[in-house]
Every structure is written in structure tokens, then in C-alpha cells.
Length: 332
Picture 1 (cartoon, one colour):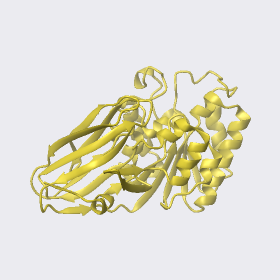
Picture 2 (cartoon, one colour; picture 1 turned 135 degrees about the horizontal axis):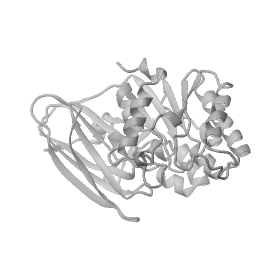
Picture 3 (cartoon, one colour; picture 1 turned 90 degrees about the vertical axis):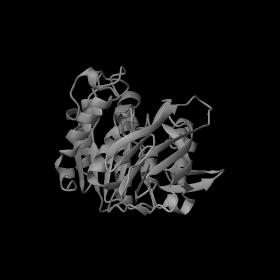
Picture 4 (cartoon, helix red, strand yellow; picture 1 turned 60 degrees about the vertical axis):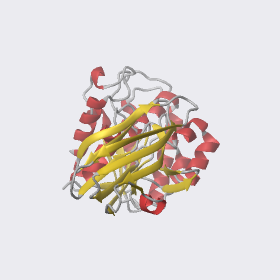
């Protein structure tokens, strides 16, 4: 078998702002250097989470009958479990999974049979950890054809956008939506994040056709209403300034078990969604989706914290999101 080189790997990557080679591995970054530096200066916890490989994938057509994946994994969130999912022609054929402790850097590898003939392969990287590619090997002399995607997306959000707590990366709403749209999507989700006007000022080289924004639940938990209003308005204004003609889709916070409490915000969570809807009226080419209607209001669709969806919750989230008018026109 033959290992693909850096140039070949780079042509197969989707969901990355940049790709770098060094110390014997290839690293995929969903945040620009400027964005990582901003988080380094404002929150070391959020900075560490920027390394998680949420939304990163390798996608290509090949006639190789075999594939060998080798990765180097370290923590990239508060979760220790991870999964790399392998698909052939849209069918999941297996995964490379494990657990990682704080401070560990461990290598994992696994081989997969792909079957005969030309087929489309997709390798989804974990949302939960920092996974670097040590090698991707295919049969000697196998064809490797990159996949082009025309629709471009940036997906801003908190832990639920990052992927907490889906068991596999393809089950997150961000992955399911971008796959349905056939989109090249960069996942900017950071667990614990709120509306951050300064982050909204940063800009990717990546030019999106569509932007989704899903903050608010952490603002409600940890910010006063006045701070939230200023941060929310500033974020949307800065994103609009960066991308003047791009459709912005804001998703208000999901239902959660403590939705009727007032928290630091001083009002129930439903008020956050109402304020986002009012701010949206001042931002051109922006629509709002009511997140409270996306998952059934029942604790069994969420983790024991009553906040993060389990797989069944993400399934409802994705199904109902894809049914929204703003996305229908992109789904073939």
C-alpha cells in the first residue's frame, strides 16, 4: 500500500480553514490563525477547543480496495471519547474509535476493506478531540480523485454546533445539514461560547454562500441581558460587514429542561430567542429559525444535563432543520 503525500491529502480535505504539515503529521484547522490568537488572548479553554476536528472530512473517489488510516489523537474538548467514521458510497462501513485522557497523545490505526470498483469514500473526523493524520494509505497505483463542492457554508455556534454529545460525527446537526446541502462547511462551534462581537470581526479566506449562527443558551446562563444584547447585535453587525451579501440564518436556543428559569440573564430562555428575532429585523438578508421547535420537549432526547442532545435528539433537530424553507431550495 502507498501513503498519500501532503499535496494529495490537502486536495481531499473539507471543512478546514487551513491544513498544515509538521512533526510527521498533517493537522486540520477549522479556525484561522487570527481566530485562534483571539481565543488565546480571551479564553485558554476556548483556544484549546479550537483544535477539535469538528466538521473535518476527507472525501474522494477511488478504485482502491483497501484503506489504512493512522491518526495521532489528543484532547480537544471536555469529552474523552472519539470516532472517525468511514463511509463508502454513502454507507457507513466502520470506524476508528477510542478514548483519550488529559495530556495524552496517542496513535490509533485501523484498516478497512472498501470493495471493488470506483467508489466514493468519506472519512469524518471527530468533533470531540484533536485528531492529526499520520498517514492515509491506499492500494498501490489506485486512483484518487478529489470531490468539489459548490455551496460554501460557515456554521457559528456553541457546544451543540461543535457536536456535543453525538456518538459519531455524522450524527451532529452540523454534519447532517451540510451533507444534505452538499455543502463545504466550516464548523466554528466552541463548547461554552456566547455571542462574541470581537469574533464576528474576524474573517475567513473561505467565502461562504450561507452562514448559520446558533448561540444564546450560554449567554442566558452566564450573561446579563444588557451584555447579551450588545454582544448579539455587535456579532451580527460584524458578520454582516464581513460578508455583505451572504444569507445569515440564526437558530435560536433549543428547548432545555430548565428553560423557564431566569439564570444570570434575568428572564426565561424564550426571551433570548425573542431578542434575536428583534435584532434580526435590523440586519439585512437574515432569517431566524425558532430552535425551541426543533427537538421534542422531553428529557429523554437530551443527555442527563438536559441540555445536549443525544443521537435521537440530533435526528429530530436535523430532520426539522432540513424542512425549513431557507434550506429546502439547496436540497436536491
